[in-house]
Length: 485
Image (cartoon, rainbow, N blue to C red; front, side):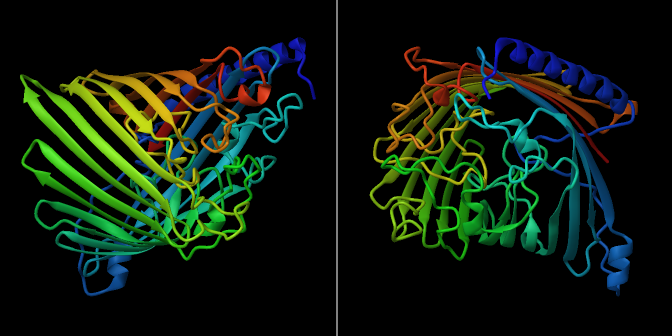
């Protein structure tokens, strides 16, 4: 289907109409409530404190448990240049979370969420000129079934935890926020994992780790084994340029994770982490954070090094079906320098991925922790990268109103260099503008969020639509309302 100018104009009129409808609906909805949710840091449910009950019965622990709820509305629109297709979607959803009171240190947690598509463009449609599919709006629903608009529900948390003093163990389905496995930046619901997770704080150390055997990625409604979760999103290309085909062909028993963070006074902290995906690849990271007080503010500095290596044959003996080529090794350096006070923060950030190999991490699992990360794009699947990003944050109205801005330049290898460019992404620039407001008083629980992202191509000689549509010379607009109680 070739998009003519008239059809594009009509599509954009439809998008504006849906955004206006969303704003009207949300204006009415906000008069009822909504609450703080930060899709970037991974806060998904509010926490309600409850007295620690240790009675003589499990019944008493269940009777005195706490119930929390979360309603979420997400409007999104993507605008591509020229005759290329535009997209829009309006999603709503809600969920309930229950946690028992303590019973000799034990707690049981259960939560679930549902989603409805109130209206959208055809998210499963393929653009005939570029061969591109929708990239962003489809993530609000189920990427495995774009035509499903109503039967979108998922069991999220189902776990048993035990805590004693400064130690906690959780077994079952849960939400984690680690450098590479995390809820990710905003869609409707986060990535979740299942397994055994331990957290211990001895003295100035903060230790955590465990074993994960299944994952439910964001933008899906099912749970998958670790191996099955890799490749649900587009798989890109193998280093030799052939189409990657690892989904359903690689094998692993799970993910082993260990992290330790040590503080040295008020200025310095060091984190060391290792993430081992049995039979596929290993990722090790060390990060150093430093801050120095100056007047009512402080100077911020941080440095990070990440290394990745294949384990055995990277998941499969056939190079066409493996995930991590044994011939490659990834080395990533990232740094930050900035200044902050209670109401301002500004940082300059830089990341270098060397030519030794592509940085690989299943996008189904989370976003990367590099300081140059910007919402609506990633540098996963790339090698030989230079990235420069300036970020700023301003707090107003006693920190209820937050303004965010970020601008970055990303020098990438040639888009057709599959050995260092898995998804055919050209060099680009990006600007993000965002704001959020947390209501109080009669509207306590309501939080509104607006994000605008614009990406432009840095090489005008690239004209192939497959390197442009949904990648560069485009903008993405997001309007989000949350209510938690």
